[in-house]
Image (tube, rainbow, N blue to C red; front, side):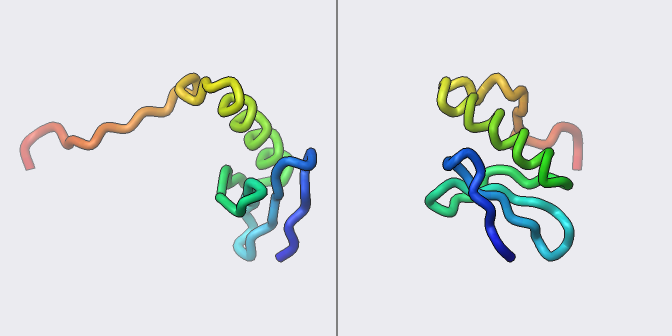
Length: 70
């Protein structure tokens, strides 16, 4: 698969199963999306938040405990 450089900042690549991934210049995976347009838009937004040090604004949170009786 061929990577395409976007904004001289990150790459996007079509995966063999039809999804799109973006990578920084060091090869670290950033975003996975269903279309190239969504991948580029989401990556730009992610990098903007990262640059402004506002990654917590995305609104994603995870908890490592399971509630209830197992």
